[in-house]
Image (cartoon, rainbow, N blue to C red; front, side):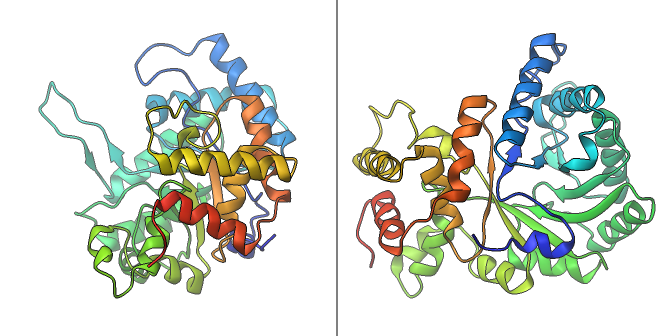
Length: 325
């Protein structure tokens, strides 16, 4: 297995990351119930059993309840905090019908600082291992962000910094205005979302016009030693057991291929789908979003699975639905 760039930055992170978006109940103001705390305990235990020591949050997940319920797990397991890596994200603000404000992004210094205080309070911890900026803010003043990062690092509230859903150009601009190295970029990548591959394959092809994945971003992160994290890694179960009766023939064919490979390698479909991502030279670190303990454990074997070049390309070509140009 490839060495992860994140490990070069002093973080002994696992190959997989547990995504906490599904914890805490619904995306509403309903209270956290005992069943939600139980669910969080079971999911965390399954992740740890699978060798996962890194946990991904965001201040918006289930309107803050995901962090609060995770904080309850940490409170009930006080030895856990120092044995795991916690990252969270900020920058997305929901709309407010009463005031007429739209959903928006906010990378202002004051909002970043306030967001981190809220994250730490909900989690019940003193520091974040990594803070990610969630989605690019068109009104970002990079100098302000740099000041926020400096203040957060100096206060001990955040140890490292990263971004999510950003292009190479956006990261370059931000990096120019902060002494803190950007160590992570989290992007939607899966066997179903393959724009990150198509960008390179479609160089000098008409099909490139249809692809919105920013050219050069993957290569930039490889050159700069920025950890590529993939969200949506399991493609919402499209190839691992979801009902695909109404899906395209390419999806059905790919799901069958995933199942066949799983049987041949005596592993799970989840492990095959994740191993496909991890086979790429960018040393992708998949974030898994399921809270089902059995499915979390099913993902864990991905770190033991090696796909040949031929197996990798067979899945890729099947997913894209047409032969390579």
